[in-house]
Image 1: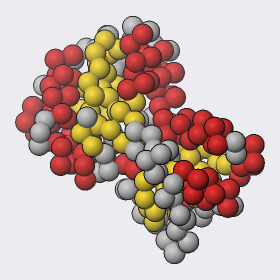
Image 2 (image 1 turned 90 degrees about the vertical axis):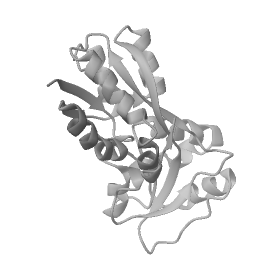
Image 3 (image 1 turned 90 degrees about the horizontal axis):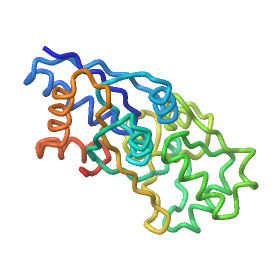
Image 4 (image 1 turned 180 degrees about the horizontal axis):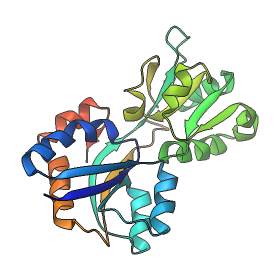
Length: 225
């Protein structure tokens, strides 16, 4: 029996946790999961922490590959960004990029994460020319889903990966960002250069990429890569 150590960000978590028991039963291997925000994962990897598999955005993994920390990349799923409010709150028009801009400007508070979606949204609001106008009402969330902040009433409008919003109770998902400003992020698994259980980690990746996994991935708000 192998013990596989996996460090992952939250975007792929719902699908991953649903698929994991099947792999453990079939293989007899045990998985140790370490969850952390994307920026922390990159920092910990560059600081010398060793795991067998890293699940992160493809862009972040590419940076780890350039640094020689990750040797192989396996694309698992893609995810877009959605908008959420509290149940019963007015559902803003998000039918176009201009409509989203108006909704963000009109909201009393806006929340996004420190992960790939948040990095994109920060740049998007800068391109829209509204970053300075909204900076005092933006809450950047780390360590929990943006939806949790919305559910507690600590922000009026939340934007994050659809797969991270879907599992959160107490929110209303308005819908995905419109095509003209949508950002599709690829989430991938990377084999650590110093992996102790490389073969078992590759077998886990094969399980996550198997045709049977596609339905689970779609149900959790993503698309198979």
